[in-house]
Length: 392
Image (cartoon, rainbow, N blue to C red; front, side, top):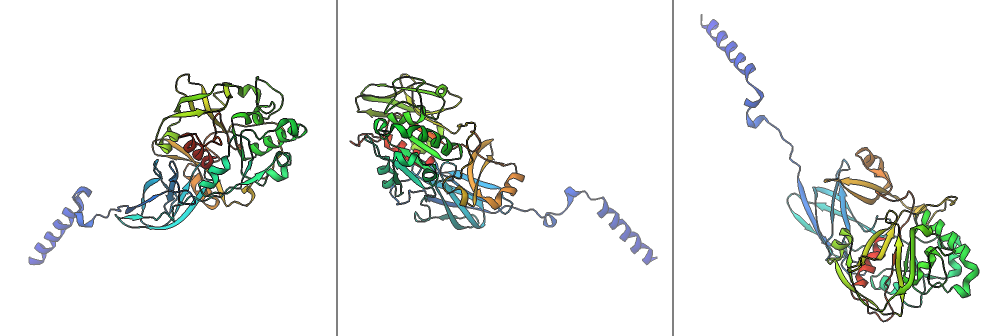
């Protein structure tokens, strides 16, 4: 009889255990994976440590290639939160193809690791060239940031093999010298088109809009012969008046990187190239006249042309990085350069190869009606030109 009672009790206990719902499972039997994270903090600086860099992308990936990303503020400061462990951290400006740094760092659980300014200096990857001008010296700003540029001439611009060595070309105001180099300009027009269509980037200031749209040393009419940017996309006339002009920054990313959205630009020459009209689908306005809304600074990566030969430009043939478009939370898209070996994994997570916007293969063209005049009297415009250098 005792054996029967014990057996009956055992059966009852088994049935009670089988009827217990999942919600009644003891807490000590539940396993839950909690992602352990930590933070990296630092200050992005120019290569010589003289200038904080705002608007730089700082990012890393976890072991499944999920991205963790932040931006440096106008003083160069950043805090990046990411999973714990040994990571490669990337610091980039622009799309990352011309200026970037890689850092090995260990992220610790619930701690903030401070990176030194020696670690967070933004390195130059691009090969940079400039044509000497009469009215400004962009090369001085490049050098003051700790970067290097090689002087080339209009004769070099007429040789595609020469300019194809570079990733970026700066055209200083007054460098065109059309009268003494007139025979070179058909070749220069062709070569600049090849250069940009294959990913090279160009900055031109003031009078040197003539490299883009044609004309002589400056332009006084629309639809002039020469140049490589279609006449329908831009017209500029040398009719700007001397004086201090109130301007506003028209791009949220540029504003955040600079830390201001208004400035006074000193146009201290007798005349400057005033933008008469432009195609807003082709150009993005970065800085405008605060009173008239006239464009003062434009950029585009929309350049296309038929019959352009495929030509390797600058570091492109030897790079181990690929440009991709990644979508962040909030449907924010960013263009970055990532190790090529990571691309298939990122594509599987939704990234696309190439920039988030612009024509496939096109480099950037930046044009400013202002420049760093030899007098040095440019105020905050100089900070904007630093941004231009680092984002080409």
